[in-house]
Length: 146
Image (tube, rainbow, N blue to C red; front, side, top):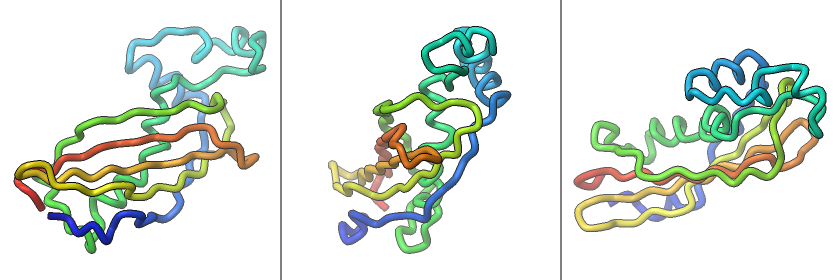
């Protein structure tokens, strides 16, 4: 079992600048052709004054801290047995091209379920104005324990 002493462990801040082309590429990759993600004129005329990122683009910047957790030598996770269980996002404010996103992440829960370990990670992302934009939560299962 992963030691519960790691509940609350925070990871170093990650930073990501939202690029217009990256937003477009992501939208195309997931098959979402909403003009709010791609057409500058549509974005300019919107209530946001610019394009906005597709909601699940948050996976790009919000959960970067998970990689830090995966390779944390103190946790010593068995990466070969790790399965991504769940993921959800709470969208607080739209993200636009040029936003500079800062994300903090931490382990919020560790539990044993049967022969598996379950670890939950939460990340909070703010923009350059310090406004909360996204809260991401991810659950990972380590099959057969750690």
